[in-house]
Length: 165
Image (cartoon, rainbow, N blue to C red; front, side):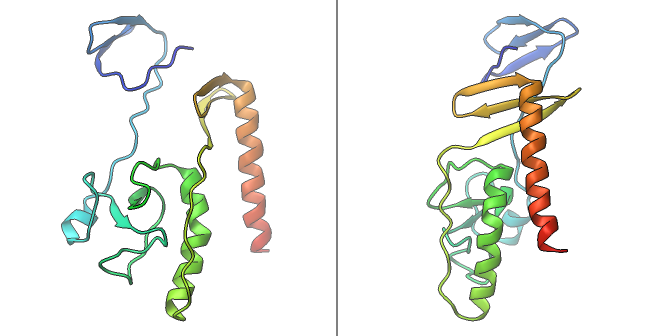
């Protein structure tokens, strides 16, 4: 399965995908990944945002101009890591830091810094028991990535289920 990144698409028809450079690629199925988009909420509220409208926070997941406002996940940009991907991997890892910092802010405790990992596995289900896996520059598609995704997802859900039983 070919993979194209950073390529503009001019048209898609039943048989071909045509890029903005005029290249035509035969296709039978297209998986179109466009990336995240910020809500207008932050910009219209007057809160500090990055150029794409994501709420700006520091490494403690706290807004510098309004320290009583915290944020995490896909809706924020961390000022120390402006190019950090907007994905579930970082959102999940920011969750416990956010929770800890919310509690510490109420008790005037020392806030904890979020430090992102450098690389991560990203797996997207493509249906029919298959998935698309990326890790760094490595890309895989098929049943094995689907099985890896199932394992990771079930382990994650079990961890949180066990916390609340």
